[in-house]
Length: 426
Image: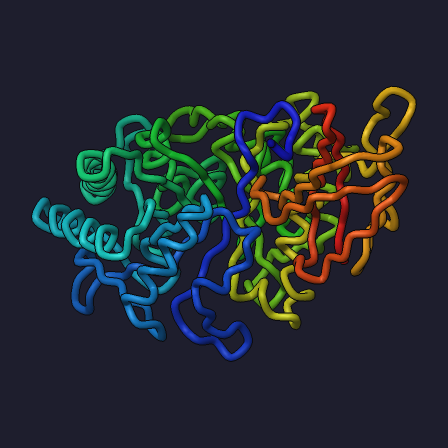
């Protein structure tokens, strides 16, 4: 069963898991990541000291064998676990063909050792820059080698595992939308990478935080931390825009996720409160009114928008970060589109109350009596519980075993009919 109507694929909640201990956002075991995160990006693979190309990774506080088992456990539940390359503190540059080849070899070793599904390219600072050329025809050798290296890793992965490597990118705004104002240095420097790998790219999640003001494709200037910033910068990478290096052709909506910090402490700037995020996302999805001054070019929005990303899962997990898993909870509320009362079957409607609920949920059965199967699905579409019920009138379901969040109930009777309802456990 899908939790969305007329979508090409299920929405993704992407989160970074950081491989170090922070007093405010502590290290957590990978198997403790909240189940709502469907794409987990392990941060980071970094160059060995003294190089910018020989990549290394090891879990800092977990035995490698345990970590490998934790990766496999997530994958068994349908989640993707990726290794992220770079980060804010690592310079990755391929300054010769030999460096390119060692980058490929070292990344393949990390991927195969830990069983990762793919890679995330999170290159910041001086790792990526351009001195000329165009988006379609870059001239900088390190940039060309990076594109070639990622393509080679993807080909090697397919040859070894007979599967597509899952590919995401998390550039800062200056490297992407910043190309509208200038094309050179870091400005627009990611655009040749995105363009060259667009057919292989699963999710682009531009960091809509730690950013200066940026142009929208309407010529307006928008500031981080606002609904207008989220909407304008997201539509820019879908519709495309002109730069000094040529026109950047936009991506498909299902390749684009909105990337925001879990709370104010998780980033230097750009935190946006949950109500504003929800208003912006619902407008982008074509499900809500315009919340600010920016007007979407495409009426009806982008119902196939891929999802949301956050820095980071570790931050989202701590109660001091705007409440435990508030980002994941907001994602659930945004992307769930079932009403709380299912349309009538014949002359009888299935109703649930109270909703939201805390421990006990009462369901008014759609038929006078009979045998029923009640299935619970979480926001990723995963079945998390099943109850067999022989009853009439109403039933009370005790739910202490379920996490807080949004669920879809599916009730089936002996006649083969189905009834569904959305419920929220507080």
